[in-house]
Amino acid sequence: MKTLFITSTLIAMSFFGFNLNAQEDHYPGTYTGAEGQVGIALAKNNDGTYQGYLEVQGQRYNYNGAVKMLGMISGSYNYQGNEVGFSVSRLLGIYYLTSEGISIELSKTANTANLKPAQVNNQTPAAVNTPSASTQVSAVSGNRYNDVQNGYAFVVPSNWSRRDSEGGHALTSADQQKSVGVAPHFYRSLAEVKADIKDVNDQSSNTYLKASTQAYGTNGLLIRFDGTAQGQAIVIETVTLVSPHGGGGVSIVGAGPKASYGTENSNMMKSIANSVTFSKPQSSPLADQWKQKVNGKRLEYFYTGNGLSDNWKFDLATDGRFVYSSNNSYISSGYGDTFSYAGQDSNAGRWSIVSKGNTPYLVLRYNNGSVKEYSMGAGNYNNEVMLNGKRYFIR
Image (cartoon, rainbow, N blue to C red; front, side, top):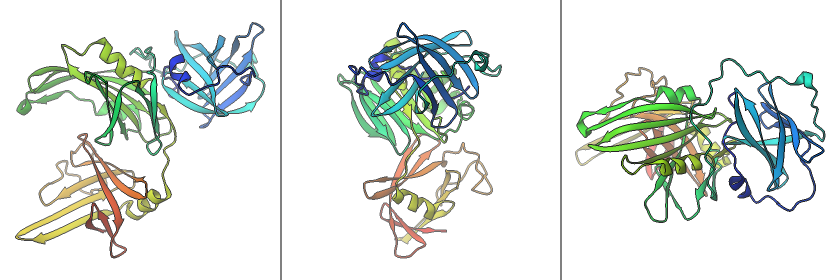
């Protein structure tokens, strides 16, 4: 059961601007998620509460006593002995199911709910791991930022500022005392995330960090690093969420000196994480056109002059990975064929193309966390592309 589960609260959902005074009860019925893996039935009881079931990947979970508050249905169901909250809401005629951090668009398939007991199965799959990190922190209230190209949205806390930073976002409190980072990632599963989590032992920078992980809901991990960086005791906490739409997700990061990074800092990071929703990434025709042109190709730059010689290469694999090499660098993992990389090298990472206005950009997210963007333009010939004004040959 690895789809739902992000905490939804009344504060978070009221941000979406639901009509709190609507009298029409449009909720009773049966719904299915956009991906067909999630369904929910809502039947109204005589006392005004709701009962029904939540269905995830063929497994059904009964609930009863859900209530209508702030224009949405809020309730909970039992999952492996734990009560898991959920809500169903409607915004501009579209229904959404939200639970523990993910909102999924619903399609109404019937105006009644079929609650035949024989169809309900409350047994959970034996292979599912019980979440071990608490997600019960209220989602933050503020202004929602939507990154449609990467397929995620989050709430910027009230009175906080947001600025673009390294391909992501830096959020800072008004008093400049707290900060949280938000950045997209390209991990396809939690297993891939776990495989990349390692202790840090760097004698040259006097940095020694011990890593620990806990499940965060069923689509995320809470990752914590404790130790010293350049001799200073620090804490780094990250909630990494994987999108149900495949091909990536988003990470929310909080950090600070160990002496001052406490529960308040941790809860703020989690509350921003609990405001995250996912959608299918959207790509513009312009970005798609450039992606077709360079997908699976090598982009190579040459320069010779004043006794200097430069040669840079970007190999852009069809699965979204890339390798960078130059006459001043080498691929340390010994890939052999550059399109079959190990993925851990600092000269490799994930590539994508996005459009900002009428300009396409090649975005390179390196495995070491750095992000570089290159504006793209046509060269003099069909086998050329201009990256930040420099001519690269398409091989």
